[in-house]
Image (cartoon, rainbow, N blue to C red):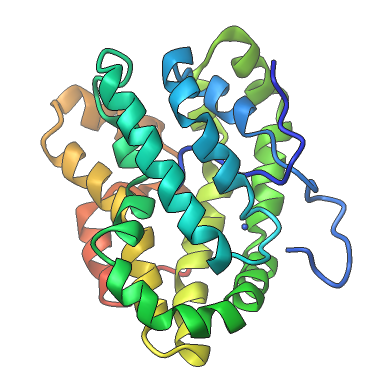
Length: 250
């Protein structure tokens, strides 16, 4: 199994600090290959998205985040182009859904992002570090990837049930990060928090739309098996509340 030794993060985004003190519960790097293998992502997809993962990984230390956006956008476009050439690899367009935050930031919201870019360049890293510390984001990602069940799933070629059983901590962190990032960014760079929220919600909204049209059997499985801490992320009604700034702090 290939191990990434640079600073790293995840494929299925959703959307990581070198703080003044060292937190031993947080890795200095992240094995994103372990994540995609645990999820059973086909090798042909991994070949296309590997350079993109390398760019995403540079966000892990929460330093120079804004400076890494341009190469991130470029690598995302290249990954999409690669997958289009290999149509049988990602027939359900899962990468498009999982990375739709990046797509929105680089495309539809690019002009707005450019307007707040100078301010975010100055204050964005510190804000991300603050919210990561408050919400234990990277610590929970590290715990997830250190789980023996996730390691086994990766070695077996993927086990979505095992992944599902260990998502709770990640969802709790993300549920905490949304209001934190929105409020703290708005304080230092007016309106940038709402822009960030808009971008981060994109994949969740895509999944919630899919579930509305999904067969009853899928809806029943999700209702019974998905960790309660993750349910907010797939419910259309919750997406509407989040867009209005009505956050769930439970």
